[in-house]
Image (cartoon, rainbow, N blue to C red):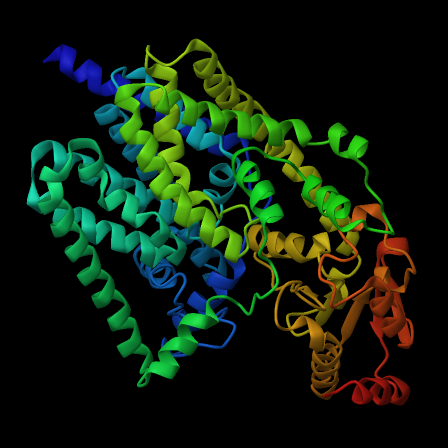
Length: 552
């Protein structure tokens, strides 16, 4: 009995210690749409209707792409309300953070259990969970209020239950696994790309005799999904196919111009290892940016080695699995999971940090197999193990509290003089891709302020061609309500600086010359913040006339 308890303790404790250590010494650089989720939940907490949704999907309570996250966040806030901050916004934010941390714990223990049933050596589970914890996307988003890590945790748990169902020949576990996998889709719809791979786990490992378990799990997953989305459709009162289609399409947030092989090629390694702002330099190289040209030598000095190392790691996993007879089933399962995930990424936002989360269960399960299987050639084992160790160091440093504090201070330094002059109704506009867009969201997230910053256009979306009319409409509406409108001084520069994240040609529908020409004609009356500060637009007759001419 004592030996059994000791074995369970050694299985449970090491990944927990690593997880607590990692999340204590690091902080997120990218919080995604956390403020959006908080605003949507606050609307319901303050008495708003859950039936409301908009074309952009941002303020919806029942959003097609993240169906369960806002309701779950609202429920968590109601349960945790006596124990969190008395300020409602801070309390909702804390509830989402607690949810994320707990789901992160579920993810690492589900991976531990999954590895235990597939690999021979117990320590392989610790290697896999350490790699997961310190992967760039996981370490960042587990400390945010987004649904990506909760969805990954539920997906990972579904994989584990399917393996258990196959081992125990249990229909009940297959039924539960199907429901759980539907829940992963409810957290974030792109997890549906990985669900087929999870459902066929018994077939891949044990053969056609397991078709009954796969059928049971598939039916329960489908029924749970129909019930889940059917309930949301009923709650929203959607009464026609066109309304349901419009609701589903709203979760794309009108993104139209962000597909391509280059985004996928960069996005896969970026999800594993932190590359800082080097994605901007790769875009400038690919687009031949005339303002800030980048050559091959510049790329080699930056993160090119990380991209090469990440692909060496993935290649080592594939060769290591395929080269061993008992690893080939895992190899084919990996391919079955990878094709739809990468295909979806090619079609939609393949460069974003979270896009490859649906592949993480198979990536780290494969890594555990390759580092622990004695039949795998030593060379491939060393590459896999060394990459995991390198990512632990690189990502731990890149997301360390000291580095994130430095980023935060840079954001605060730029807007500190602006804070006393604005309120929640003030409009503040910056160029597309300006670091302050995400930085202001992080300030909201960390300091619970209502400080909002908007780019004049979100690149890759249907809104880009009409950015002038959208800006004119927003500005005139703000002035009608006696609210100020501020713009970044960056607009008045004829040439964008290298550190401004702008890439000429990233979206050919808008150029820096367009931005400069438009904003340099507007009259201003107040300025703050020095060379990289802000200007308050004057509600003068000349400005109003210019903006009215740009309305469509």
